Image (tube, rainbow, N blue to C red; front, side, top):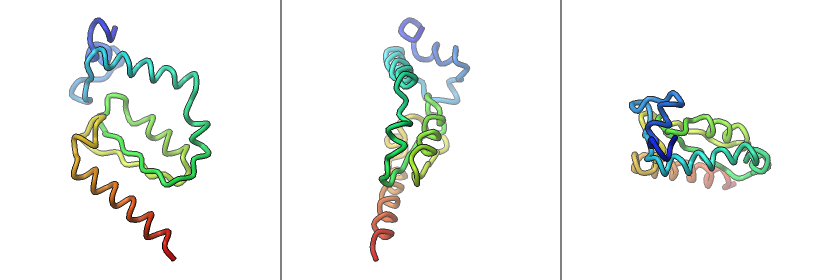
Length: 117
């Protein structure tokens, strides 16, 4: 469906409305769907469960993949921070570059100050 009807047709079939998400083209959506399907065979939650580094997880509220995967990541990685950016899609770092850079710098600065005696 994604290859023939484009990403928008596939997203409509999944119940996502174009106004609620940033819709990829058909080829991109097809590749993303294959990658997401592979996560059922080899979920990342097992290896990431032992990840012990400070982690900032950023997702756009209107990401065409949804925020669910990011929520799962945040619950899997102990001590991680989850930021769901309103009115943004999959490319938060490009859609809201100034905010993103500021958020990452703040996250890193907090880690540096917390590690100092």
